[in-house]
Image (tube, rainbow, N blue to C red):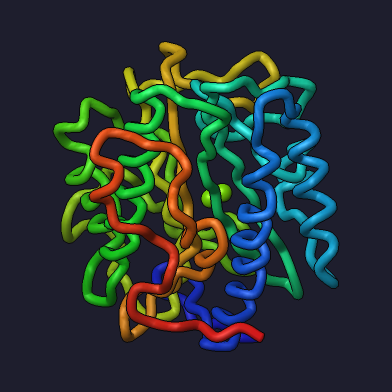
Length: 287
Ligand code: MG
Ligand code: MG
């Protein structure tokens, strides 16, 4: 089918956005189902098996990361200093860890992408802090995905939120367009500048995904050639939504489920943070 483009960016129709949201809701439900399984003693491989089976339990749905560029897992599962692309393995989670589970779903030719950082058992104040700020940065970045804004405004919202928190934005990892493929144009930097980058317009679908670090903003790739870790070994957190830009504003396509639950950890100032999960101004209906 002929598709509109804007500077190499595929614009999606309302029906196509609904198809992406269909996969998005599978991920939100999955993250909700997996939460009680993210406990001390579980291996990341066991969580990956759960992801794989859960996604495939939906007719026609497959984990989009499986085999993507050769990735061996169905989810990217990244613990503590690991930022992204952690390979599920025999590693056992321990109380105090934080673990990011990043899942893509492909169904009926359309992809969605979302990530959530979970606490394992009792976590420390520093872990709660980075999780809370990262999640709040996502909320504000999503809110900036308005027609009339530019791609740079999304990352600028992250910059503004992170300033003064003692945390660092990892500049070398970015969000992206999502649609027929998991990774499409444009890149969505988390260190954006206001008014810069492609103009946002209805039909764009973006994976917005702040990735923060407790220490240095520099990253390294581990010897497994996949896992990206903070260079100094300090904590990292990652939250991600797939978001459609609509005429009425941003619509979160991976909301609901886990995103609407109260947090089960307590952090500094935690209670004052608003939640994120429901579409901000547009409701996408699902059967
Ligand atoms: Mg992702
Ligand atoms: Mg992504």
